[in-house]
Image (cartoon, rainbow, N blue to C red; front, side, top):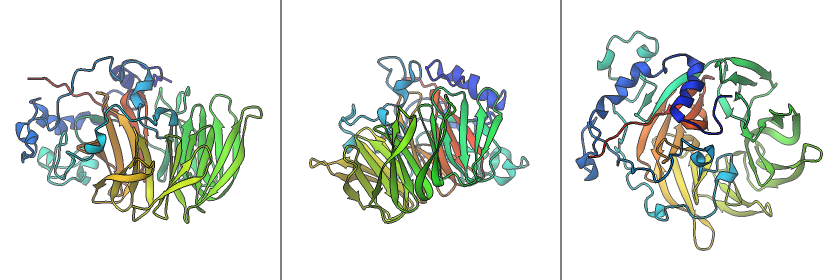
Length: 450
């Protein structure tokens, strides 16, 4: 596939790949003017630096200009640098050592106060205009509602993939494959060709897809009472039995496959290279309700549950070594970044956890939102800076700089976005409750220093 897993020029790559999905112009081309009017003067706002800018929108930048990179940019060379520091479903990208900036613990949320609108153009109402969606809004640029599926100048909508009939619950890009895979509660997995943007196959599974991940050439699909494992290179098709109820979360770490299930168990399989099969290893039972989120990092497995807790497990002994109880509702998603664990919940908070001298995790920062939070995903922008994507149950996705939690942009959908997946060269994907998958592209905004 032309997704350039081996690197290459980001802009040209994205045009080659997913402009093929949608044809010539980006879907957002007609509304880019809506998002860029305030970017005419690329200077840092003096009042913003003083913390008292009240211009909406401000014609100056509400972010610092990037320093010239000391070496080739993240998007230019091999793909390894682009995701460094994020665990997600790739445990190898997480470093248990402290990150390059040892002062992060003092920087969380430093510029992330309410009203911080760096890079985000505000409108009267942050809601997409229904008439614009139908193509017949008569107010044009004077409309008080959004005529775009996004706010912000650092990303654009490339195209939309239609076909699923219910909520998207998983998106996967297997290594070495030329296909994009999407799973849905409509009981199907769809296969998309990245050259043409066409759906080349539909796999009917006979049960709702609760989650889906890829690890190397493998795709793992969580279903009621079973996990399906497909190898995109050998065409191996395995059924891993043992789960009780829906499988809500999957993750791979330390050569083990973990599945979080409806009955509160975490089932573990170990891959046997000799038999080319996954053999049951153990079942971890400590949660009182369904396990809905899993992540691996720093030789630990972290599990989030409907019982409002996060469990910390040793990957060596597979024993629970700590229980975190600061959330007051379902822990929907977990993410490892640098030496931190991030968690989001329906209690409308993102919590940042850091290890104390004793080795136990404690909350070092809490970011509050106005709606319940659903999914976390980490990526780097085209300047190599870490960005957090967080979807909420008001049908939007927020983009935040880390560690400041300053707002970088916002995306909107017709229904809740339950799946977010990063791709190569600044691409990322979102899937919503209507079954629509959107392809987004990070955009580098030219800046000038003065």
